[in-house]
Image (cartoon, rainbow, N blue to C red):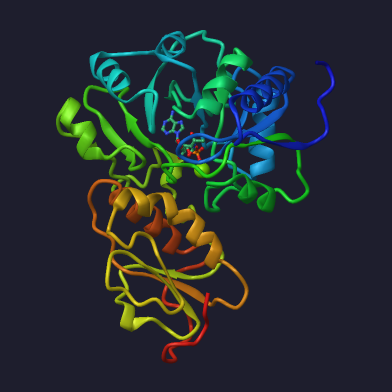
Length: 351
Ligand code: TXA
Ligand code: MG
């Protein structure tokens, strides 16, 4: 293929044959330097050939992403990964235990390898992930190249967990050539990012694999602390990220909801008026899978803010709390997050 096709969406939820056709078309587009949005089990990715500088640069352009923020490179298996990065013992153990899956490993990049320096933002490390989703796997096989793919949203906004979310974000389609619709993502929050390029593993972002499960394989994991130096190792650690456009307050008791605010709850015995429950049974996996869809559903005119009840900080709850903290942080140009500027008693909106 020399010319890139016009934008289209392929629905690949019905049967394996459609999924394969979609992956074949997607693979051709990627090899020709185009952009393909595709499902992974965590969130949808916006993919380009990770060895093609120009294609990778167009990802940064259409997302409005700062070029210092490196992309995750997706590979089909450990063997392809081993061609791109150095694996120490810890990295090997983790890859065996969690790939394919929702774990991204930051590793020393192999010198002179084929990866675009634009994808890795010029760092001497690279973030690698082997996704488990069958469509992502098929696409990687068909493309035959590693795929650089951030989440398929505009920079700073909530990650897409359904193909429709991508269509809503990229209304003018910008340089997008294909969206493969694989239905809703089963995990629903982004991958856990672990830096294993040094002697001890460091957690850069909690995500779809629980830290407790990682520690069961490699022992204690440190958490990156950016508070001293202010230096950002994973720019996804930028304070305001994954944010809806209306104010969001966390750790709110249901009775302290403000007028015009909608509530996100968790667990049994929660109020139902103007509220969405992440998991009525208190299942953190179900809650993670619902989180971004709920944030989007409530981010609409007429709703003045979102209040979220406390979520247990264990297992996938850590990833949920991390995303909620960022979503509630002040956005660029704002000095403080602060509560929304209205203090009336509870409103009456129904959702
Ligand atoms: O679940 C996911 O991880 C999804 C799917 C599509 O794979 N991808 C995703 O990508 O969330 P993105 O770009 O939205 O977030 C990737 C994060 C960014 O915060 C980036 O700074 C960090 O990974 N990252 C990438 N390369 C890195 C590196 N060499 N060192 C440290 N952090 C890195
Ligand atoms: Mg992202």
